[in-house]
Amino acid sequence: MTDFKFNSEGLVPVIVQDAYTNEVLMLAYANLEAYDLMLSTGYTHFWSRSRQKLWKKGETSGHVQKIIAMQLDCDADTLLVRVEQEGVACHLDRPSCFEEVLYGDLSGTMNVIPEMKRVIEERKREPNPDSYTSKLLADEDKRLKKVVEEAGEVILAFKGHDQKAQAWEVSDLIYHLMVVLEAADQPPADIYRMLAERRGQKK
Image (cartoon, rainbow, N blue to C red):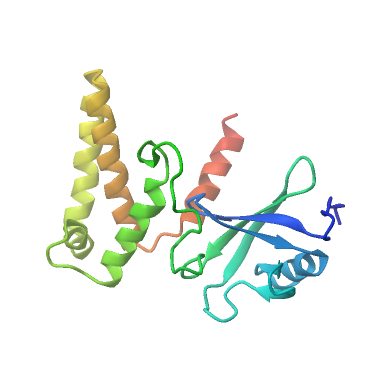
């Protein structure tokens, strides 16, 4: 086992991240026993500093975190755990514990991707007749034609060298692709594996 640099309390901070969207979900602490439990069970376990006890994430709520990968930082004093999150990560019933914005603007970041993914998933679970997303999810031909249409618009925008149009059309294409993927129950992990394979072939 890699030697961790535990702090004076015998703990190491654990950053938990969604394995498929890269959204940071929470920060917790683990001691050696919690770390061993993560390795043996495949689910996140932590040490509660307030309760002074081990706990499994989701043991009462059912919002467990299946570990996809675990990484150690260059100083060997912080763990990054990528998980498949069941339900929500935050005890306040929020997807992520990191919600309050203290500085800057999230609108120009990838923060929108997990938010959009959650909306599409919700429309699939609970269709809304007034929702454009719900209408797409209910009509395979419509959503597939939209991908073809938006791909064409992307080409025209780039041929026209119009950055505003490029951003608009690419965002449209991404959204419609996300709807198609959700409707097909396409696991994102399969796509990422293919990308990783291509990356290895096209260095």
